[in-house]
Image (cartoon, rainbow over all chains, first blue to last red):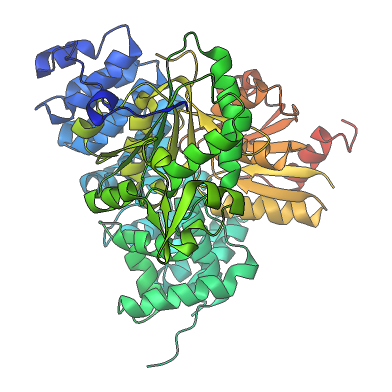
Length: 207
Length: 280
Length: 125
């Protein structure tokens, strides 16, 4: 028969490390022309001290999606201040994919991101504020509903408010009831806002 | 204690949340199924009411409750020829495409994980022997891994209950198994066809040597992982596969909650995922 | 019955479009991102129209359209792209990716309906 069984030692590729794995070399390999080399370097840098800045630097110029993904996974695993700062910077990138990827990574770091939420929610750029509201979805923080309520009470941008209402449908309580009613009056020509606010109210008042 | 009740609005809220997290959609007909399990968990966690339970579920750092709940909402029995359409896909579509592109006569390598008690890798082996026309032209290696050494030993032994073999055509049961008391012992040929190894998928050192696979079966495992672990697993499989290699997930699992690295491929029997061919 | 796939990560937005489109007699399905949209297209058969958000996790609207336009096995149905962003370069990019119409959120019901009808060939431009 042609089902061939090898022993475990043959199954697993025990090749000698072709590349050195000390942190200095890894940082170097992060810029290697071969994407597979870059991927392994990004993976192994997870345990290197002070690797976050070099990872963020590569992330910003990395063209290969598979390498970007591993860099982001590693940054998320590290979750240190530098990693978070780097991810936040990516929110402002011209590259839409990078912005979305950074947002996703931030959502996996709720505790690390919580301290800077206030600032992000009042960023002058409405797109950053939309992302900030998006991040709230994964935050375990006593102030989440309060922040959302503040957004719908005072953010001038309809889409920032729309994003907040969507989330209030899931986490809202009677605390936000009045703000939701008022939101409809804030944007009287926006049927979507009316629709979304009504859904949230229905959910909040169901019990 | 007042009888717990899940309101329509609560059901909708939960349904959206669960769909977002897992990709599993419950239509209205599943209301009773879902409500009962939610009530069970509300009580088990002493949450008092659905609202409290839901907040806990959403915000729990460990993600344990959502895993427990997912377990409850999905069917997770293992048995021979479970989700058979993927084995059909393997021989009807995946293998023909692989051999067409193969540049040499090196063995075709298949990784099945988790092995659990072995039903999946042995099913693959049986399917290849019975239904793949080209089995005599190609060598195939089947490696199957699990984190649990006890269950690996059980898999190596190859002794199964009636329940486990119940889905097999009688002819195959007779051909590959010997009744032994109330159990069925799988034949030596099949036991010799699968290499069982211990692996912790989340441990980089464990998985580093797993490369050069043509097909990976990882069914009904990732759905129980948290978001980050799922990604890590998908990244690991990506490097474990040859370019053009295939990954098969469970029927209620989807790459849409995991990773964008793979290309979805539709075959007559199934949608599976492929590592891009031009990758390195 | 014409089939429309709504691709947007916001549940309320999907609900809103569904409400409008089902009223008008269309069959509606949903996906939360580009990857799920592709899976559904492959599994359920091609759709007659796609309504595609831009910013979504895992795969955004541009990524999805690029994938869709590269697939011979799928019907090349028209796509309506919807975004929070309104700069001219976003519009250009959408058309380049294979969208026929680009709308800025929030979308009004008549606006959504009319543009869908237009792309489905049900009204004359």
